[in-house]
Every structure is written in structure tokens, then in C-alpha cells.
Length: 103
Image (tube, rainbow, N blue to C red; front, side, top):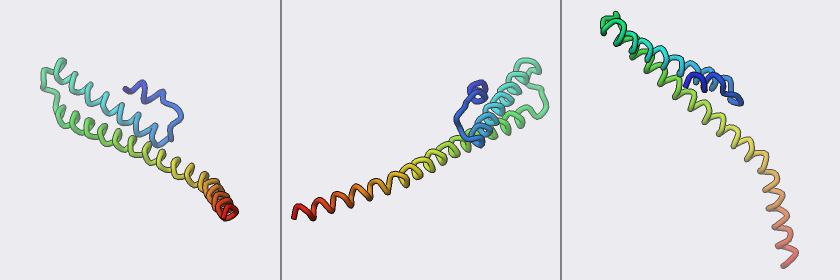
């Protein structure tokens, strides 16, 4: 997950950093969980707190990354619709003129 977050291209910078931060937070969370379980036999101080803070932080960053990407897509769709609107208006006007000529 972290590798793919790091090598993505063609996305807004905000989305890139939010995704990478979320992925790295998941790595920290899982690493602390594993070290506590296998190296310290569940005696690492504050391990549960560290795991939960980094896990929920990763969830929040990943959610914000998705939201920023969706917002960028919505903005692009609105811009494309606005650019196409004059063409549609011209086509509609041309259609009305043809209807008047037929009458």
C-alpha cells in the first residue's frame, strides 16, 4: 500500500500527500502492533495508545485523500460542463431557427 501510494502520479499534490501519510501511518500502526506482540510479549508501554492513534490517523488521512480526489473530479466535471454549455446553447438555438423556418 505504501509503495503504491508513493509512486502514484497524475493526482493533485494534496491527495498525494494525504494518501502517503495515511499509508505510512498504517505502517507505523502495524509495526508497533507486531513489535509489541512478538518482541516485547505485550509489555511495550503505551503500545495500545500508539496503535490506536496511528490507526485512526491513517483512517482519517485516507478518508480525506478520497474526499479531495472526489472534489477534484467534481470540479473537473463542472469545468467540462461549463465549457460544453456554449456549444449546447448554440446547437439549441440553431434547432429553434430550423423549426421556425419549417413553419
